[in-house]
Structure formats: C-alpha cells, structure tokens
Image (cartoon, rainbow, N blue to C red; front, side, top):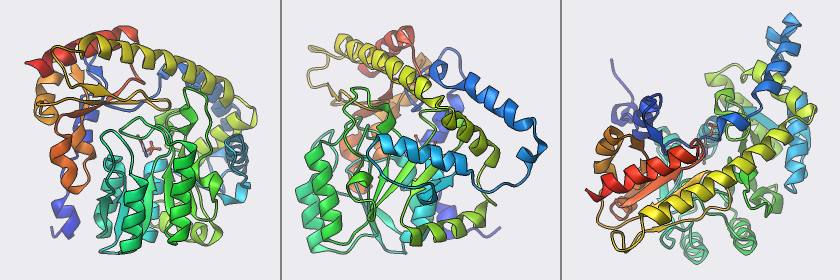
Length: 391
Ligand SMILES: Cc1ncc(COP(=O)(O)O)c(C=O)c1O
C-alpha cells in the first residue's frame, strides 16, 4: 500500500510504549500525566448518565450541548475570561483541539514557535502539516525567554502561531508570572502572531494563585484550549476551544472531516454535572490531594537525589499541574528506561519533549508525574529510580 510521506516516516511514539506498560500492577508509573482517580466525579457522573439515559433521545445525534457550553462559560468566568456559550467550540479532548488548529493555521514550511521543551502531542500534531516546531531559547527548566522571542519575531519569518502553556507547563511543571504573561501577549499582538494557549493544568493551581490565563488578557488573539481530562477524567475525551468567530466556523468544517460531531452523550453528562455545580467539589478534592502528592514527591526527591551521589541534581517545584522536571548529569534517561521499567518504575525521558536540536541537552532530564501515585508508590518509586539511574 502506498502511504503518504509523513505516514511512512511516522514511528510508534515512546509515549505509546509507556501507555502500553501502564496496566502492570507492580509498576510505579511517574510516566503518564493523570489526576488522582479517587477524587474524580465518578459518582456524580453515574447519576448524570442515569438521568440522561432514562430518555432514549439522549442516544440520538444531538447538537453540541448548550448546557455544557454554558457550564464552560461559567468555569472560565472564574479565571477572569468573559465569553459566551457561543464562543465555546467542543472537541474530543485537547489533543483533537491542537490537531484541528494545526490543520487550519499551519501551512507547509511554516514555523510554530514553542518553548525550548514542549508537549510531545503538539509536536506530533504538527507532523502531517509540513510545518515545524521551532524552540525559542530559554534557561534550563524554563519556558521561552521573551527577549529571545522578541528577536525571533522581529527577525522573521512570521510563524503560524506561538504555542505555550502558561500554567503547570508540560513537561517543566512551571507557571508564568503575571509580567511574563502580559509581555508574551503584547509581543504576539505587536507582531500580529496568534498565540495558542494549551491549558489542561490551569485548573490544578495547587497554590491557588489564579493568575489570568493568556486568553483573558487578549481574547481576540489568544486561542484557548481547555480539557476535562485532568479535572473530570481522561476517559471522557472532552475538551474545548475558545476562538474568534471566523475560526470557529472553520473548526467545525475540519472536525467534520474526521468525525461527525464530538462524543455528544459525554457532553450532555458533563453539561448536567456542571449545571448542578457538581464539578466544584471534586475539583477542590483533586487539588487537595495533588498538593499532598506534590509534597511527597518533593520530599522523596530531596531524600534520594541529594549530594554526594547527585551533586548536580535539580528539580522544579510546580505550583500547578502534575509534573516535576528532574535534571541530572551524566545519565542517559532514555537508555535507562527499559531497566527502570524492569525494576518497576516508569518515567518519560526528557528527550521525548525535545524540539529539534535540543535533544542532546535533554539526555539527562526526566519528567515525573506525581498525579497518579499515592504516598507509598511515590516513596518506593523514587527509591527505585535513584537506584536504577545510579547503576
Ligand atoms: C499540554 C497538554 N495538551 C494536551 C493534552 C491532551 O489532552 P486531552 O486528554 O484532552 O486530549 C495533554 C495531555 O496530557 C497535555 O498535557
């Protein structure tokens, strides 16, 4: 069979290999970015599905749930975003949102400016487009340096868009300060370059600082991508885009190429959940539990990755989201992964987030997700990790 060029080049991604080893009961997985299962709204959703399915009409093709779009509008208002239900475009998760945006905005040969390390799913979404991600320089463990971004924008070529995560960055675990947010949005505006803000972790602001998302600072030029994956459950496959009207109309055209509408029953159930105010309690419980898990992870890292064995180990202390970025020296994290999985601990090697030439520098870095592990798992997992990386 004759495949297209990019399909021929496409290989099974390392994240897929990790996903496939997830079910092992003896494995402590710091690999996948998941929230604590016990604090998700499973019982409230069961009641919502029950209510819905009492009426067979729920199983018919229904228009995108107005109730859910209204609920998302109310959620966004709490983050300082003033939008109406009609500005919310529902998707099957944030990954689909990124794919749709790439299809509409990236032409072959275009650059998309990204942080020096970035979300692998964005790099994957770019592959079929013929565009390419270009990492803007930044310090170790940091998002793009805005002076470097300003120079890139002045020098050209004009990128299709700037892609970033302002809160709980994946994989770095860091969040932008207010000045940084304002300057980034101002730079995008000055150079006429849209920003795509990917925000799965803004809802998991563990320190409750609640700085405004970039979209709140300029709703016309910052396209916002949200998802229920980290706050109501990744199995729901439901997300949303906030975009100007012109783009929204085109979004539904490209989405219809691959799927007639999004998973509507899930949308209706989530709409019911939000309409009854039942997401709030589980979101608070998720944040409380994540705060504990973050503390356990940081303590375990201090216990096992301190001097003298690891004189140059550093790690980020996230104030939002699920990730810690561990930077070591003299360790090939990707090469050690099979041995680590054998020993019963999984992580994502830093090189999975590399943008072009940054791969070599990331060899000794690891992304650790603390979201899916209780205290015992974190303690034993970090102990195994130190052991396997030392040997
Ligand atoms: C930054 C980022 N964007 C998008 C996604 C995809 O989210 P979804 O499960 O909604 O497709 C993830 C998932 O981990 C993510 O970390």
